[in-house]
Image (cartoon, rainbow, N blue to C red; front, side):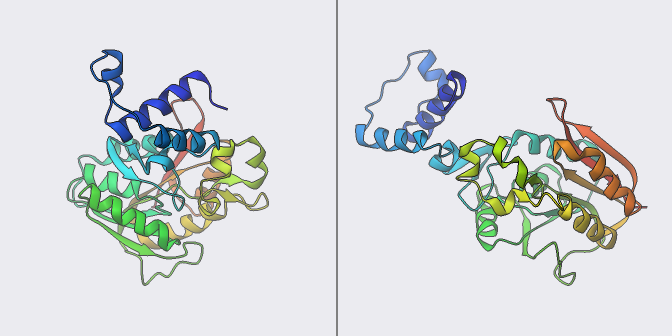
Length: 266
């Protein structure tokens, strides 16, 4: 199920979480610990059932910060760190930014931007009350100031949402139903499908809704940033063009795959 490298990484994560043994301690043979056989057997059973180790420990790292995760939120990916890094790089010298993270999930994007872009006013919205509770916990854990809002962003309540935004960012559901066959069981069986999948007949439904929302909420010159399905870079960019955004870019991740689309409201 897991190759040697993945299995080794999982082992080190569990050792640090359960017994505070770090990789360096093992390599240097600095520490010994008495392991509870019953507890170890329970962890191995969960690993063998393909449950992600992040759900077993209840936490993960994102942009050098620790986040709580559970069955109500996606496990943050490295590709999303690239999206956050792009926004920080392009706005690090700007002051008092107003930012909305749409489809926030665990809150990892909003919380990271709040922490890294000082004096920013950050909002985060999601349809799931359980996800929002997790995101609020993560904001407290990381001492981040974020205002959380429950809203269906496919049919947004504009009275709830902030106006005059400098940045609208989203990592919305974008995996097509037909792509399920290509996914590992640890994703399919454990991560929330509400945050993952869209119908094949309308795979860009969130990008259209959020592009329309951005036209209403972004100030002139405001930026919109999306994480995208690697197969739909051109199509997502075309959505932004259809809403008259300018300076549209399709950006690749570190693996050379189309992963982000950005545009500017005129």
